Length: 133
Length: 123
Image (cartoon, rainbow over all chains, first blue to last red; front, side, top):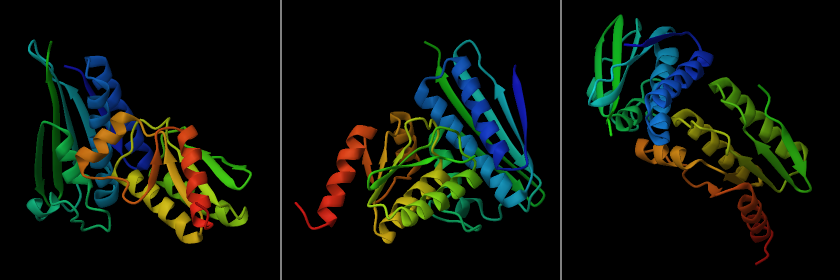
């Protein structure tokens, strides 16, 4: 099980993380649309880290098995946390002056999406998966 | 990361060839708008053929840049969006709202010239 860890400290790391996600998706055999979906979703989530928490960690893991190709990406930080997750997932809602498209946008691009958030620890996990042909 | 802005007669031509950080994108926006004013440009084309990711932030910056150019009095066209990028933006619920787009630079040029002559009171 291959895992890539990228420390997120600034917007340059956002670029690094999304490139890493695209690369793994390409290597595992995801199509170009899925590569773009994953890179874009990682970009949204890691930007949130820079914007709201300052620093965090992005872990991209190959969890493929004999039936499917699967990438699980966990983006975590020690920031203030998301007080109202339902609200944060509403299109257009933002507590930080952004467009409010980041979280709901990322959610729409992947097959599974989860948030665990308490003050001091937020983990957003996204899964991209396709059946092996 | 400086994005070159080329002047071609009355229009400005830019092509984003690298993966932009958020700061790069905002600097590009500022540079382009200044160039519109300094060059007294009638229009700008922003070619994004080389971009394989346009996330919600960059989409907003591109959108706003085009609107800002229009407020300054220039027309703006974004050309060359990759199909995967278009697909991802629409799935995310983010579109380049109110911005003229073209499939490639060639068509972008035609569209921009048409917008400019329309604004000048031509056909």
